[in-house]
Image (tube, rainbow, N blue to C red; front, side, top):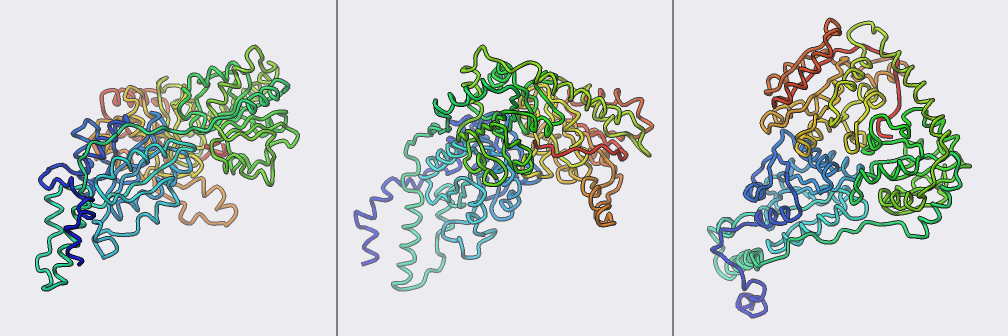
Length: 604
């Protein structure tokens, strides 16, 4: 009776369209959907499980960019998502290829970056049976991703990828994961060879096994090449209601000392960043910019306040949290004045109300898109502007603080170069179209207070997770998205160790960037507290390593800069810029001394 089922109409119904002679494979379905969604790059570290995806994408004109570590591939996709407004895509092989991405995927989740991770997997019939690199991958990624799916038949590939791409961009953006068993990606004739039983058992059991394998193979490829829609599915973005916007218009119109705290969420599609900038300038409200919103108002806007944030928040009578979260970066909400009116706008309900049960209470809490909200608020307040004396007084405090910081840059350190002086020189000489990638602790924390992005979407830092190692991937993605722009990676010497091998990638893929390494032979951000509290610098010490030689070995151009080069620093920086214009990645290994300059987190 079991055998007869193979010939029954109900079973045959599942695989009437199986084309056993077709040379096509599942990777082609993946590539077709990605192309239809405007994907230009797929980042990868190659593996046999995913080769059909990579080959098919290349044939359709999608650029395949291979890196030296899977985490870099995901970081690069993250950067593309942030800068392009599309979904960043990374593809890695099964098992250790996927486990190597976990930190980068978690970083994308916390940074709210729309990212699609494509992963290989053991064949459908071999999962859980001890196949090479076979682990429970779904359990790893379900806590990290908005959507996880394991493809079980070739015909399901297109709709699964379309659904994943829509979910990645909807609501609060984030990573999604699709697992592709190897037998869903290769052609029928190759898979069928693997399904064949060389010495099947005799008798009824042998017939059952043979039938089962044949039936599974037919179902795997049934209807695989029928024409399917590959166009994008609708993306849902939450919006403030008209009543909510009107209430906020009334609150802002009555405020004498309003402040806006702008977070990365404000830079998300669909609102162009130039429109958001125009809205902020129309409102005339002083702004503190954090994360991807750094540079939103240009380099020297009278509305952009960089210093004394805690003092400003104590004095403000209204605070607008536009995509900004009351987590550790705002002391969990404790820096907010309880007498202030607080408007909070965030796509994510949990982030919107984080710690509001303890340290702060929103006057109006809106689960919606911050960028669109700012445009509607500005339109409703047309003709109204913030009292000029308020931003002017905050700006005066900015000027005073920055003059004091500049004096610290003029001080001589005990040895080597003053890192603050180096950062000031780079900031003054970098091109107006520069993109700054921040990857480090102490040196990068100083850079966040000194370097000024020239425009929107020109600053990339890891975000709330504070991940080290983003530099190589972020810079790679940034240079591919903006090939005409100067891309600077600001590295600590500790963080450089995570991705210095990507200088090989920069060379092979002709993506010339400039790496500025603050080399103080120490994990200084840790040592600053560990030594005075615990009396030991154990594990904090590094060496004044010749990182410039490492860059040379990977095909880049490395330069060592010490105190004896102080008077030549401008010329060395300009030479590095010239090298990148000529297509060569450069690394400036700057030996720096210790300073007393100490500021807070870079991800405000």
